[in-house]
Picture (spheres, rainbow, N blue to C red):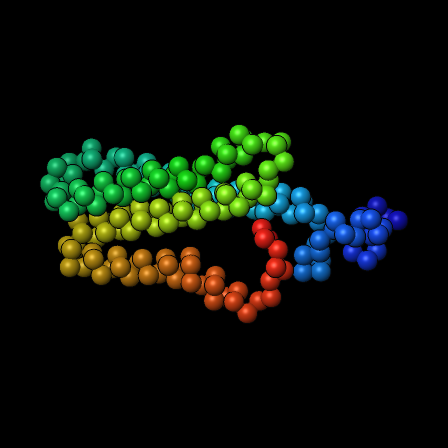
Length: 182
């Protein structure tokens, strides 16, 4: 052979059963698939973590600005919820890395991937709350609540469409492999 690893029907019979072909093209064992899934999830989390950390850093400076002393009760309440949501988002989006360190080499990759996916989804929801709060606060300070409220609601709708509805619509007619963790 030319060094390529045989797979599928070309693989020896004892390897055919352990070799899953993703869409008929990717030879990988079950463990390799879980490893790939976790690697892909970590890549996605890196993007979200960076945004959350920048947002959180920005939010921490707000109370020290001169204008914050003039904030309304509503603005202070929204700010408090926003800071807490950003802190929760950061914790949830960083948690899979810490969790991986705790269960490293214990053969728990499938459980880790399922758990990390759920935690990442919760982290993105907390990020949505934080982003909404920031948008509302900035628009309320600049243009008043009459414009801030509808524009924030519109922004939340856009995020929900892009993050939750579109993936379901785009992939609803695509055949799935039927395996968990793909």
